Amino acid sequence: MPTYDYRCKACGQTFEHFQSMKDDPITTCLLCGKTGEVDRLISSVGGIIFKGSGFYVTDNKSSSKSSESSTGSSGSTSN
Image (cartoon, rainbow, N blue to C red; front, side, top):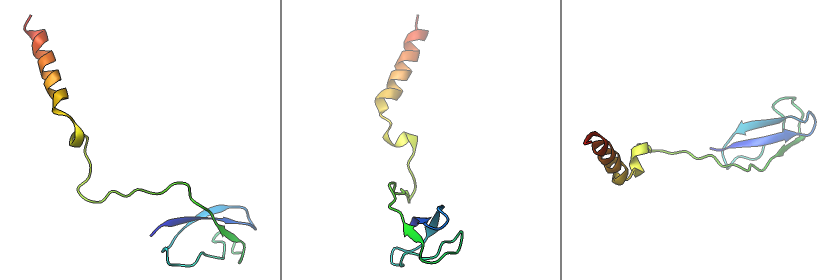
């Protein structure tokens, strides 16, 4: 269920309301209580929710970086 942004024409304040996509837009300001003075705003950012086991730093790490660091440290200790 998405969070929608609303702006009240009467009090000029912006607020968020969590509701289903199937629900009609609200018509009463939650801050000042005026009816018929609320506009739903178009959101410019969509939320991303990652579900599952997750993503880790090591998921896309190439093995060449770990081999370079091990050869670099062994090369400096052999002198």
